[in-house]
Image 1: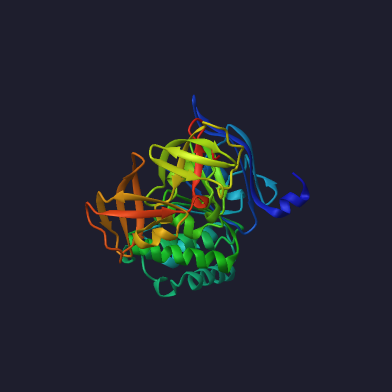
Image 2: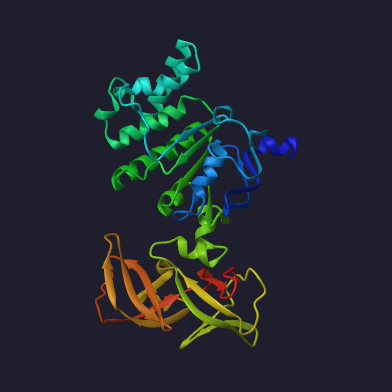
Length: 369
């Protein structure tokens, strides 16, 4: 690691392994997080995202590899020596202390001067808008207020790196939305590096500068939310991101004159506008992926390069939009359309889509073609 690298990256993870006996949880993991980035570790339960966060925090001892924070090798350093602030899923507040007492407790234990403690507590309370709550105890606070206090307890430490382990999962939907906005504002205001663990893709897409999607202790793709959404590297990432999930149609690639085609049952899709990542091969078995919101239904279908038709099997009104369940090329197929679109069970409707917005994956390796 060069001096230049240490200035650019706030956190670096090199060839990290973690095993519990014969069980490998993290496998040769590498990760560089630039100064001031909001990185989200996203994945299903058991994928290793919280384990990775705990390794960075020093709460778990790694089996192999190195961890650097602000250019310093902290692989074997105690959590208190790593210059981090951590916010957990549980609020972990002291019930007998006031909000002010909870915020100042750690600083007082460090024997920080009283004036500096007061200054930091006041700053955190002002940033998180909890000044009217300083004299209350946790039992008199709502869930959202308690989580603000938990964030404030990390904030008063005045560190360069903040770690969040699913901090919003205990809150109801409305509170999650409110605090999500506040966390984004907090990051914009402070400019600190933030690493955030969640299984909620909406949180990931709305909060992150970059998302690292994990599966079985391995990072499958790390990219901007737009990059993850539009160009998933593999079948797993494509299916994990999006609600409803991406449609996948099994078929094969074929070459007709100078144009590659996707063929499946009664569906043929020209791929002259598709941006291939690897060199395609004739008769290659693939899965053709298309997001439900990228499909036009009804009159709007006529303006699309590829057109077909579906019979409506199920309609799910979602408020702002409607999800239509049907079948295409012998495969279950969903379409996300405007809520004003008139659709009913048994209706036949034209559909259309642009193959340039599709994602094609090798049926053998699952990687993007």
